[in-house]
Image 1 (tube, rainbow, N blue to C red):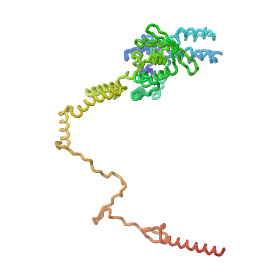
Image 2 (cartoon, rainbow, N blue to C red):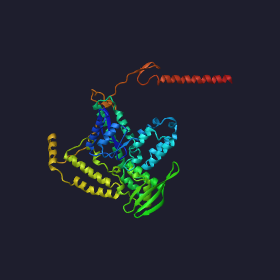
Image 3 (cartoon, one colour):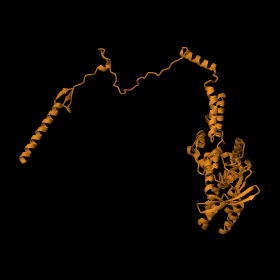
Image 4 (cartoon, helix red, strand yellow):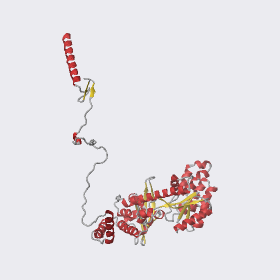
Length: 496
């Protein structure tokens, strides 16, 4: 069967699987059934759907997802370019570079794209090329210039995330698996995704702010976004301070227009962007459309904010999907991962933990507020543990059960002492105990007699020495040394 996963992007910019289906064939009817099942489960159509150029899938999406915008994978289309262009043009690296630069540009408007496309076709004589004309006729389905006004349009321009998700599912499963084996492998990969998400959540909640620009808006961005997004936003703030500067300003009623130059270190060029700021509500827009394309402000806007001493990101420019608290804390609880506990005490316990966690997260950057909240919860804690009401009936039942089990009364104080030390199994450092003697003496006073051994020097059976330390051997060696000294002295006298 054909496995079809639905892959998206979570609040940490990681791949997440929203659902999956198994199909018998890849017809339009099968895809329609799959998309209808997905819509029935999620109750909402996605804003943007990204697929390859499968015709049956394209037809099913247009019928079921009527409110969604269908987008084709750019990589699959541009991959066919070398095979579609033949002859000397195939070896022309300048043509390929111009084509890629024209197609992949994210700052270009549709009118500009169409003008440059026509000029490029006329320059290389490709006006009658069938495949290029076909791709130009559906340019609104794959060129980024036609998606620049759709929110989050640049999160996914190719199916690379889908391919990565498919390869991760292939790690544990194969076509030889049964359906049960495949479902076990599928759950393993989903658990891996959930684990990576919990790790990202922990990194977000435990990371410490490190200042790099001395701007208050940088700390505010750290408090708003997840760890992955705050890293990118703080990079935009840093580059807006170092590589962007205002060259001209115009005032139109309540709107101030700033012309911001950005230095490009790669080719030593300067690009100019237009930023419009309304001082009344701090509403802002930039010609680069970074907020619409990705969901957070660009470096050009942060440059303008720095000049106007704006120290906090306005609420209308904080996308909820990138915020820290977009997911409820109960989602990461043990009960949610391994099954829901329906008991009243479990539900009350989860509710209490969720309330405390929300309060702590709301005060994460306020040291005084955290200290005050800690003092407030200490009072009911001490009252509950020390002088709070106690369930006497439950305690009486416990006492009665213990008394019945032990067969004794538990009235009065019970003193508990540490148990005496005992000797464990094994030889240990002491010698092993021998049998008790017959005459009643202690074991420590009884020693077994030693067995005599033959000394090879004196040829006697003894227990006090052996051939290595025999006295006879020592005397013999001593006498031999004296004879050698006498011989050496006589030989010296003769030579003299």
